[in-house]
Amino acid sequence: MGKIIAIANQKGGVGKTTTTVNLGACLADMGFRVLIVDLDPQGNTTSGFGLNKDTLLNTSYEVLLGDVTAKEAICSLDSYKLKLLPASLDLSGAEVELIGIDNRESLLQNALEPERGNYDFIFIDCPPSLNILTINAFKAADSILVPIQCEFYAMEGLTQLINTINLVKQRLNPVIEIEGILFTMFDSRTNLCTEVVNEITRYLPDKVYQTKIPRNIRLAEAPSYGMPVIYYDRTSKGSESYRQLAEEVVKRCGLKAPETFKDQD
Image (cartoon, rainbow, N blue to C red; front, side, top):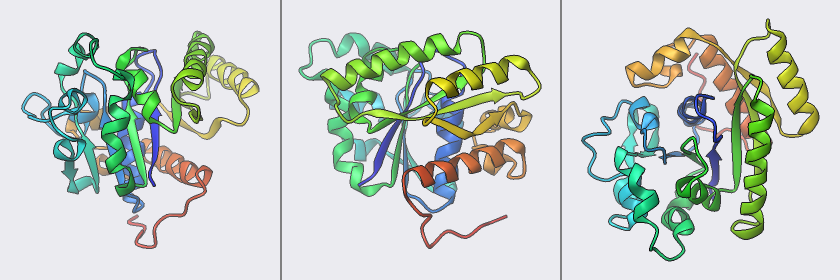
């Protein structure tokens, strides 16, 4: 049974989509069966894999409305060894359109459940807000991976997110937990980065990933070419960091890379 991990932070620009695309691609490259669900109306995860979100007929929006099944909307990205449930701008209207639907917070969970056994990992890229789409992701997920940029307001944002997770745990999903805290755009030369890491590590010592994602030009360039960084520049620091993160995620989940895995370096 695949593990469903929501990648979330209500603050934008912290590396949610970058982490979704590159962590998913690294795990798929290791031989794991990976499905990525784009639940952000901006559709950056979709375009990050080279798909034109404006021409797609079936997306996560149609799945939430019940017009198609998840299986009908999932795209096979053979070049990257994974599958994607894409998004479009239509998702921005979901908040209003789902108002009258019973159990609207369970729509994504119900849609993904038939597919869950087909994957080792399912990652959900959440929008940068705590709306009905994010609540759907939290209801469907086993855990939440939280990317955090090392900045002054990081702790405040994390506290708000933890409060929301606790509410979801009490009312909607009793098994959900924090999968891990990932520091992104990390620069060890700045005192602020070090202070933020130390503060959050003291607050959640068992949840912080050892891997930290640095600022990296190749990592920033890859989305404009519609590919994960390990396919854009496999030797870059960005590629190396996300491969290390993938190994750490696998270890924390108590898994081993499939026997079919062959190191391509």
